[in-house]
Length: 563
Ligand SMILES: Cc1ncc(C[n+]2csc(CCOP(=O)(O)OP(=O)(O)O)c2C)c(N)n1
Image (tube, rainbow, N blue to C red; front, side):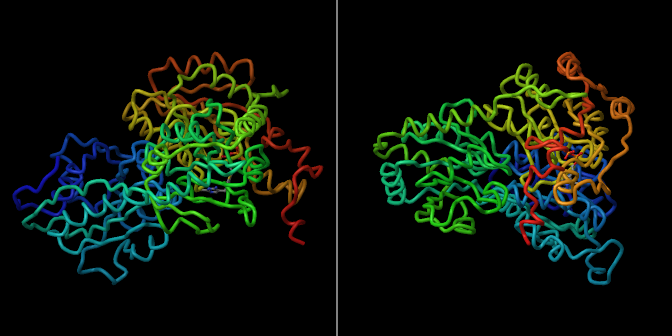
């Protein structure tokens, strides 16, 4: 719905939900609280919006974040005052680092009590100040329409991110004449044509150019334009960490994903004589601790946000633009790829293919390689996978081919507890697609309560839990820095399959590699949410090295390197 409408008298809470409906929002994630009853009640009159009640605000906000990532429209979440806001903050932190559009509405104490350390009072401007794109408190009901329209605009425009709107309890029941402005149309900055011409000239003259594609390409729906650009200018393409699906992985120009740990993709990036960065902020993980690009290595950077350009590495060419519009503009430019480009790409591709070939591993329990093999064989091409923080994710990210748009949703913020709620958020956004959430046993238990949400709303995801009874990532770091001094990282878990059944989901426990195929088939046939408890060997602690290899010094100790 759009357009100015006649002013109407209503409460702040009613106006708020009216605004949300006018933004086209159809799903809202929340944990109710008495602080925003005036808004909660207004949902009663808006059955076109599905209000999904979560079990913990961290899960709710992650779900809204993943929904925003998967749809490119702001995920919407409602939580109560201090305790709700602090629980939800992990989703705000995630949306900020992951550049995801999100609007978090938070209850607030009545205006008359502000500043008295009233019950559950928090100054959200200070609390969310360093992680949200904008924090605003609505001081008068009449201002709701103006503030909400701006909140949605801020969340989705430029570099997308989280906006927090604070709702004093009494403001939500105050009546006012409401003037509803139309939602602000999406803005998509076009590139400077001269800069695009210069970029293409520079690419034509380079011997070994490489493209690095990030979330900006995904957000702008720029994959097709990137494929055409890479083919026209004969460019190999890398993707940034957890943005694997920014370019179709089966394409002959795709040469890998930049992540922690040595890879042919890193070698390719280091060998480049021009790095063309499109919609990526060159994060610590993607750049391998800020070691790529090399000092003095030429960079051309396209980004929608001038503040991202040159933050860590100064480019010689900078273009502020929507990624898709910049790539489409480049397609109009003459292409004269230098000789030798085809070989440059073919070598990068061959090295990448060799690095993602699955080598079967002997395992007492389930080998992660077997899981990937079966996912490759059994999932439909447009399946969506989510990941959590944890070493298990390296297998999912490195070895699965992401060909469809939005086929991988992962927290570039690296926060545990994401995999399950993100899978639910993605499935709510795309009910027609198969959604497979993945996590470790540590991450699973951080938001396991959201299984009840999946069951309650019939959101049929398949959740894989890589269960090695340890916080594997930390155990790996621990063994590398302090070999054999295991402390604080072992876990004693409940029976996850039985736990899943108690929630009303299907619970499957898989202990041996040979049983995984049939179990996945069963999961894909189920008409309920499914949890697959996959028992893995502690010894297979990482893609890079086993526990024994780490103890014998296969990985370089950061602590020793620092001395
Ligand atoms: C919310 C949060 N808390 C703590 C961490 C630190 N951390 C990173 S990975 C990890 C262990 C993950 O263990 P698990 O989920 O079992 O996966 P695994 O590493 O064993 O594959 C921890 C504690 C984090 N990234 N996020």
